[in-house]
Amino acid sequence: MNTPQLTPLLTADGVTLRYKTARALITATHRVSFSVNKGERTVLLGPSGCGKSTLLKAVGGFIKPIEGHITLEGREITEPGPDRMMVFQEFDQLLPWKTVRQNILFPLRQARPDWSSAIAEEKAHSYIAKVGLSKFTDTYPHQLSGGMKQRVAIARAMAMEPSILLMDEPFASLDALTRRQMQDELLRLWSDTRFTMLFVTHSIEEALLVGSRIIVLTPHPGRVKAIIDADNDSLGLPGSAHFREVQEEINAMLFADRYDQGAGI
Amino acid sequence: MSAVTDITIPEDFAVVEQPLSLAARLWDNTLVRRAVILAGLILLWQGYAQWSDNPLMFPTFTETARAFWDALVHGTLLDKAWTSLKVLLMGYVIGIGLAGFLAGLAASTRFGQDLLGTLTAMFNPLPAIALLPLALLWFGLGIPSMLFVLVHAVLWPMALNASAGFFGVSDTLRMTGRNYGLKGWRYIGHILIPAAFPQILTGLKISWAFAWRTLIASELVFGVASGSGGLGWFIFENKNRLETAYVFAGLGTVIIIGLLVEGLLFRTIEHHTVRKWGMLR
Image 1 (cartoon, helix red, strand yellow):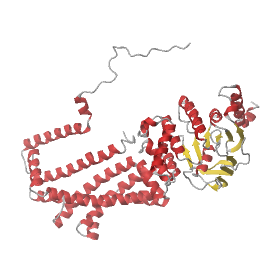
Image 2 (cartoon, chains in turn orange, blue):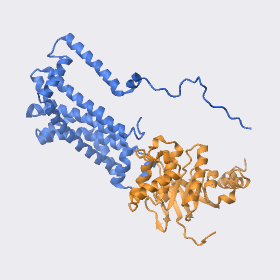
Image 3 (cartoon, one colour):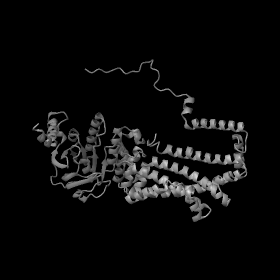
């Protein structure tokens, strides 16, 4: 809509990723290219084995591509850094020896020495409030529920004000009710601060709910099948006819090979 | 169309929250339960010693207590204990430091991992006391020899526990730490050590116990020759004089110091760290 010739914030160009297991060398993705613009909610969607998490970890700097480049703001990503904060699926991502407040303050102090402690303190408090956990500021993680832990992890990542937020199936371990609530909260947070986000999920519904753009990946090895514009306003609510239509469309896309093979049976 | 159930609690409902009785709360206290066991053991001891009536071989509890008090107030027991503790602390700190360095190296490089694995496999099964003759040969009589065996007693169990703890740290926590931009010793200090703290604490406890035993045993050997010793020497000296009650008092001191460190020091550390963090029940 606005500024058509925007340079993308994040670019993945022909990225091939491989990792070693005890038995074999596995190609996770094969020459995957995509880009993410500032303020976009991009979703990497695909079934297990499509390398979406590996791709996210490569953006995080934890894995080096054996072919291709990933650049953030024009600089090649070579190692992990606080400009790309990750939110993981696992509940144990918070440091158990720090309270909610300390969990958010600690990375601020480490990675943002230019911020005075008053500023850091204020940021921490405002982001704790944003995720609705002001009452739990001095609570240790083991006393929080799963959903609360994920909220703290999101607050921690957002408080760093990174260039991009990397979310690795952050709601996959939650129960269905909490998950729905968290998805709505995430959207509310986004409309508040308009952060850039790269979100990994295997749920088509979640991708449509959370994303403004969906990159569909197919498995073994992961390749980009399609890039779908999924602005929530045009899509309608989950359950509406149009929403279901798009859902079906993506489903067919993901399992196209299987349908072709199964046609003769 | 929807039915909402009335969920008010009926008036005859027994209790929602009832405070426990004083006795029940006291019995929940570990220290109280242990004190009761200790009192039972002391009663048994006193009873047996009085029945056998042989103070040379087995003095009563009251005799031992008197000897303990005498040695504490008029004698040199406190001095001897302090001499022992000084040497012990030195050896302990050096051993822990070396173990931390080796475990840190093992956590960050594969070479370090292999080095630690080989060294612990070789030296962990070797009792520290077995090194005494060698220590005497190399360092002669005195504190350097004791430190040598003490460091050996502390280093391997500590390094083994610390590195096992480091390897047990979850990938998620590791990635979180690296995500913050932490590297090298800062990463080890801020992420790996606190995350592995339950095992590190176990290592500290085990190696404390090893060090304490090794020290007393080696003092028995050194004391004979040098004449200026700690608790081990106190025990040996009194055995030579057939002051069995004082031998018991010396042994009691060894036990009391061990209990104090285990029950007070380590328990307090545990309470303020791993239990508070929910890493240990």
